Every structure is written in structure tokens, then in C-alpha cells.
Image (tube, rainbow, N blue to C red; front, side, top):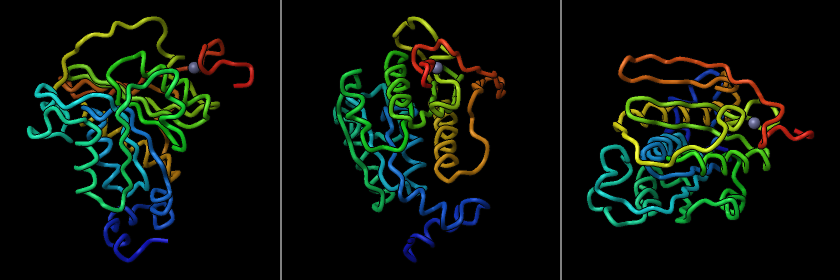
Length: 245
Ligand SMILES: [Zn+2]
């Protein structure tokens, strides 16, 4: 049940057809893992905290650096040198004390990923490298929980939602090794893509709308275009193509 304060706080979103108090209660009862507390993780965490998700677990091994501040809007100059998850937790708690914010300062690996996201209803990809995205994608498929992919480069960004057992996964779309190197980003790009990922999470949890599944959304900020590419499930996918899948 929602408290009078919650009804007031979330009034404008409870008004949305299909959400209502029931949808708000679902958000309140949800547990979300956000992998990455940087450029994408910042807007995702801010909007999901504002929306009243019950528990948000921020996972990031890194510390805040000066060069992060052009895009990682959870962090401030005084946070330089601080663990990103601690900096994130402080800002998110200031925004909404009712949301439980867990912070885990660890590098995501094949060995620890299952433990890191344990108990969460879904995983949001706010990473900056493909190897870790593959680890998260595979873990989500094994746990049969949704995976919300997002990626940025310069003025471009991409997003796709994966429902294990039903839709194409990240690995169905991308194969092979991917170079891991420093890439350019302007801060507004992760703001756009992170907002789309947070939108997808809210839609999934409240059961409204049409999810961004089996289609990759590609955003070009320089041309201001949104393009969609159909993605088909690969029966031989080494992540989701098992006989039981
Ligand atoms: Zn797949």
C-alpha cells in the first residue's frame, strides 16, 4: 500500500493510464541492479530513484575522476577520488530517502556477477565495455531476468531490451572480440540513452507499453535521428541458444 506522502509524491505518474496506484506499488516492490555508476548509470539511477523503485543496487569498481564530470552527472568536483558508488548513493539518498540504495564497489567478473545481482528483478547495462556487457547478458539469461542494454559513443547511442527465453539477446546481435579502448562522449548522449533505458525499466515493471525488444534503437544526436534495426534471435547463440532456451 502507498502512504499519503507517496500518493502525493508520485501523483503525476500515478495519473498515467496503466500505471495507477497498482503500478506505483509494483515500482515500490521492485529491486533493480544498475551495472555502472558513470555516464549512463547517472541518469538511469536518478530517474529510477525519482520514480520510487524500492531498491536500487549500484555496482561500480571505479573512483570519481575530473575527466568523468563532463557526463557523469551524479558526481561533483568534491567527489573526485571518492568511490563512485558512495558518491552516487549520497546523491540518490538526497533525492529520495524512501528508496533503498545499495552500493557495491567491485569489478564485475564471470565469477562474481551472479552474487552481485542476486535478488534483483532485472539488470540495467550502464557499462562502458563489451566484455562486461557479455558477462551481464549471460547472467541475465541464466537467471531469467530482463537485461536493459545501453551504449554510447560521441553523439551516438544505442539501446535494446532483452527478455530471456523470449527475445533476442545482446550476443545474438554482436559477436566476436571488441576492442576495449577510450572513446569520446558528450554528456547529453548518455542522458538520452539512459533515459530510454529507465523508461524501459518502468514500462517493464508496470507492464505497460511495447518494449524495445528484438529491435536495436540507434540514436544520432548530430542528425537528431532515431533508427530501428530488427534483431532476430540466433538459435546458435552461445548465450541464449541452448536447447532449453
Ligand atoms: Zn542470444
